[in-house]
Length: 69
Image 1 (spheres, one colour):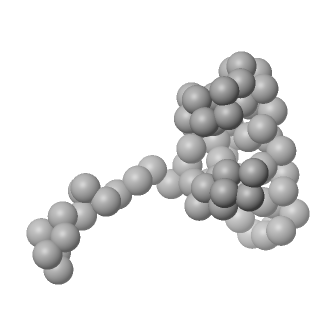
Image 2 (cartoon, one colour; image 1 turned 135 degrees about the vertical axis):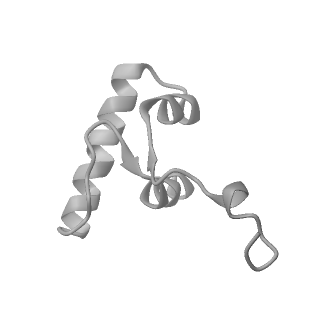
């Protein structure tokens, strides 16, 4: 424990995969990959130094995008 909070309990992955996008949007696997690609392109346009991983999207950016829709 560090500071009264268990670090392992609040740790989330840095990137969201296709299964999460598929579930959250209720779309096919192919459409989920298309959404990830679109989000990654938008992220890269907004922040050219952002780390992009093919087939995954940055969790913070994804959660912000989900709140907008």
